[in-house]
Length: 84
Image (cartoon, rainbow, N blue to C red; front, top):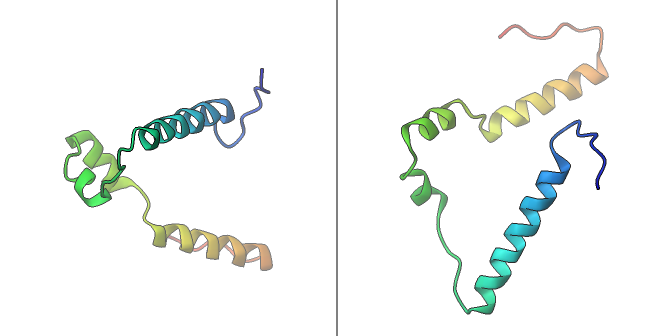
């Protein structure tokens, strides 16, 4: 059994998900089926709850701003965090 220390996520569940996904893809490939789809097409079929969650999700630009902010704070820890 894996360690129960799970600071930044559930390692055991992630491992199970990855194994199941890999198995699913391998089975489809062995059957000769093509796996295709698009994020745009999938997002058109979201439930209202999923659309609300997606609206609150961070975009890639927010992640870059956060990374830049953390890098700056590491270089200059005496500076205050900017107001939002």
